[in-house]
Image (cartoon, rainbow, N blue to C red; front, side, top):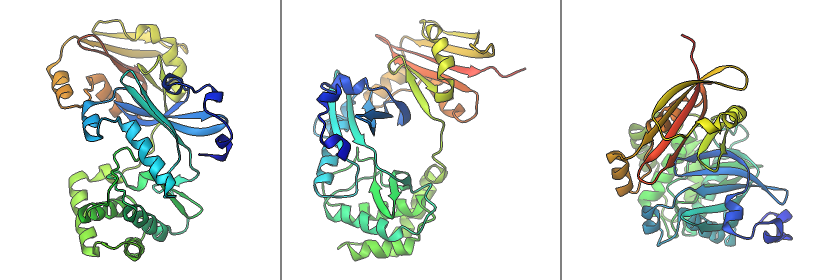
Length: 336
């Protein structure tokens, strides 16, 4: 726990129940349709609140009845006890099918943006240290590695397991780092790993797996992770680009009305915008997604993902109804 919070009780800061944590104001910095990560301030300290909008049955089944948030929180506490390179867990909990884990911020930049002295050796040593301590995670890639003063911290432990990794898992982890961090010398990375690991893979095994991963996932693994910042309004039903939040707030009464419409509305600046609203009362695709334990995305959510970064997107959202779903997307109107 950060030193600034060590002398304070979270309850004394007004955080006594799961709802207090879930209602913490902040700015969205990442996430997925079923969960998001919000940057918040707690007692003068920056932290990241990872919220699950709906705990999936599939995740509970995989984690022995626990939500992703609870599972990650428990893993982080175990890592902290062993002084392994992971951020501190400040709190976790559940309420009404929603869940959260509050993670302390760690200084540094992600490996995808790092341009300082070589960190191949500390990266290899830290990876081996985690594996030898009996932890494994499929999410160990460059975007989940923070670098600060030559020290390494691993982020995102929600899918981690408390067991020694198999040789196959070791190979895949090193291949993922090899592929997503091209600035890191792979031979130095592997040499450092082999010095601290009993069952270290060979160079050829890592290179073969990196080639296989690239054939399967290609540019998805190597593309930039830069993206516009997002904020949530109206609970979690409206997501807007941070610099367009005022526009989304002004037209929020028009966003959900239970009909399928395409309309032209005026923003506070006087500029025209296009609003597409959809109401789905029953959908075979949505039922099928629910049976597979997955989240269904409306066409508007798919369109929003494609428009992020183009300058046209203002806001989007999706919320369930009794038997279906409502969604919308608000964009700048393109001149004819």
